[in-house]
Length: 197
Image (tube, rainbow, N blue to C red; front, side, top):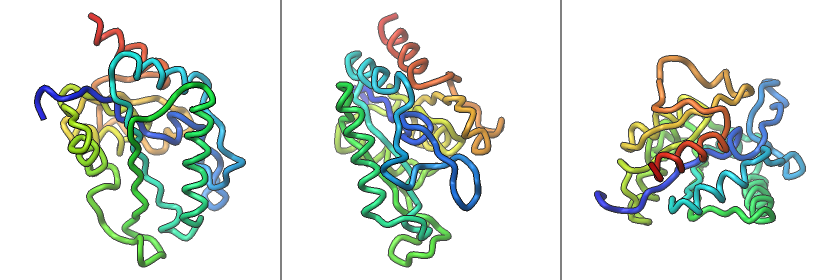
């Protein structure tokens, strides 16, 4: 949609809230318990800054733990609610949020499939853009993995890669972003400056 709203599509885990050690792989991953949810410092302020600059803020997150049998859907929704509540306590909110619960190699037959919404596919961004009247070419995808950059590129957005040290195992140099940033706060500062210049 040309001439529509500008948006910042923002990944959740590792960008807004802290990653935690996965009990199976021992690698940093999405939290699987509500009590493990903590916000990254300045993430709420960064989301407020993006909103105040006139950007729609849309969360887009892969959450395959239920598909893999690692958590229940109720647990995943409670974790999402906790993230939203912690942000709200600091005056930050999303204009919309999309979650993909699928995984192609899951153990739950209801959630095991190849889909158009799981990043690196652009389905969550395209769906939100259609609903909210977003001009994808004037928008950004902000995330900490190759899948985020690929999804943003496939949707037609510009991309900002957050160099989160704990998610380095999900990045390579084969998917270059438009912008490399140290944090969501860094991304917000640079995107807002660009909008003003």
